[in-house]
Length: 104
Image 1 (cartoon, rainbow, N blue to C red):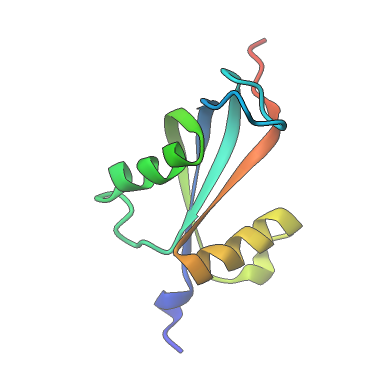
Image 2: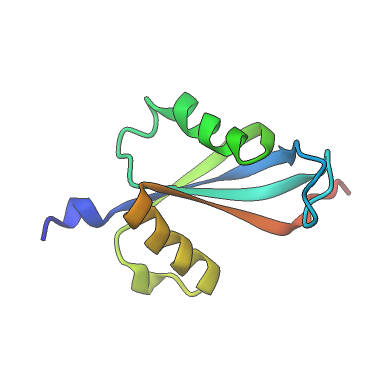
């Protein structure tokens, strides 16, 4: 199997909730997000990836960090593990932290 095909790029950042009918997130609150994608050209396709996040009910999307993950066994969090698997199956997956970002 081609090792390159197993790589998932984790783009970490934040976004603001843009939907008022979401029970889990309050409209206007910013949350930490992680977009997992198999798109090795994610830099060139950032506009398209942000559109994917926006269609899921988020706006003001900002990515701050990127990490390459080639082995699911290096992930310790069950949410990230399931998102990694979804990204490999579907090309991308979004993870949103339940707690809003607060400014101190």
